Amino acid sequence: MDRLERATELDPTVELLRARVRALPLGPLRDALHGRWLGHPVHPLLVQLPMGTWLSAAVLDCLPGQRKAACALIGVGIGAAAPAALAGWVDWAEQQPRQQRVGLVHAAANVTAVVLYGGSFVARTRGRSGLGKALGFAGLSVAGLGGAIGGHLAYRQASGANHAEAVPNLVRPGWHGIGSVTDFEADRPIRRHVDGVPVLVVRGTGDDVRVLADSCSHMGGPLSEGTVSDGCVRCPWHGSVFRLADGWNVRGPATAPQPAFETRIVGDRVEARLRDVEPDGDAEAPATMS
Image 1 (cartoon, rainbow, N blue to C red):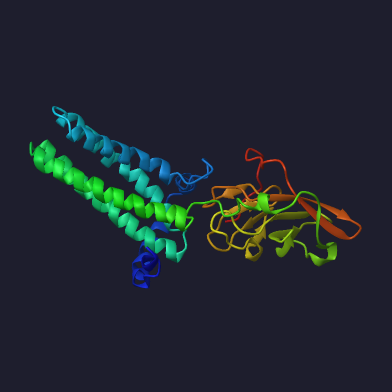
Image 2: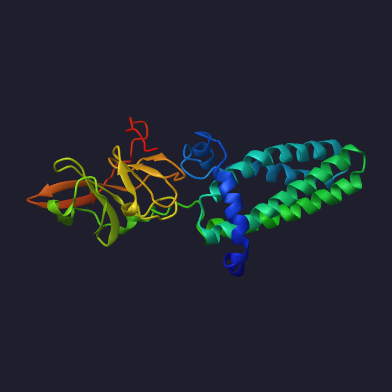
């Protein structure tokens, strides 16, 4: 798997497919497929249906008199694989190169499994149950391999993980100085540190100062290198948009909000402390950047 992460020969295919996936006219459906409404990627959730039906079909294939039920389960799994695959491709297109190389092989394994199950379904409907079972078990084996590769993506490469989750555990309670008011130019993102944790600081009109964790919750991109507009900051890596007031993820691919800080001014010094309350996703958000 480590060699696969470094397999640069896959990059031309990765670039071609990434451009095709990003060009799909999905509109608001793209954020839904990322799982922004759920708070974490939706692809692993959708995968449960095809894998569950195919595993159940394999069990029924080991029992007498269950041919029709097993065939029906395989058909349901093939149909359920389509939305799961679409969600996976949408997530994959916004990952880092090493993740995308592994993800490409993960997808190839899953496509192979669907083809095998398609052949199994056709064979069963034509009365060739022996061939159907053989293709079904082959499909389950390949799908299992694809799942193992997906596990490497999720747990070794942290694909889909919240890359800002550790911030509340790293920042000690209380107020922390981050600089003088005059250090921050209006509407210009600046990188500072709170208790050793990188943060984004944006000064609005007057003495209104907003502070968010700097590492984007999606893939750890530096928000301080992003663009600020309409009360939001856009990540420079994959375009996630966060509300400066409370860190709410206004637009994906980020599925988790950004840790936000309260601020106060003591003399001419700006101080920040981690917010205890969760961002209000139902609050009216400012117009997002196009």
